[in-house]
Amino acid sequence: MGGASGKARVSQELAINAYPKAARSRALRQETMQNISEWFGCGVVTTGIYVPLGRKPPVGQKPLALVVEGDSELSVRRARAELRRVLDEATEAVDEERFSLESAMAGGNGMGGTSAAVAQGMGQGYGK
Image (cartoon, rainbow, N blue to C red; front, side, top):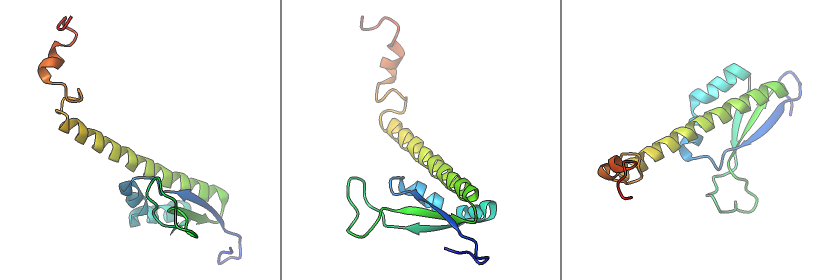
């Protein structure tokens, strides 16, 4: 793999198949790709196909991944680390949203469905 200057290009793969869809989408946004290009001088290419968890990819296919390519090992490592940060941050947001939704569905008091009256009485000698 040679760049326009004839220098060898460096590339690293980042597996993204197991991340939630929202996290993968955030990493693949045009803004994220522009930042990677501007900040680290790297390009990013999507490879593979999405494979649902617990399944194997079809013969000859690989699970979804990003290939980060640049002129130096350092720039590629930094770009890959930034993509991982974006993926992890977006995954955390998805997890927090899921927890908030589950909490609201369970009564909204963070007690996993425990009624407010029971929660108030906890630790005050009730039920002993």
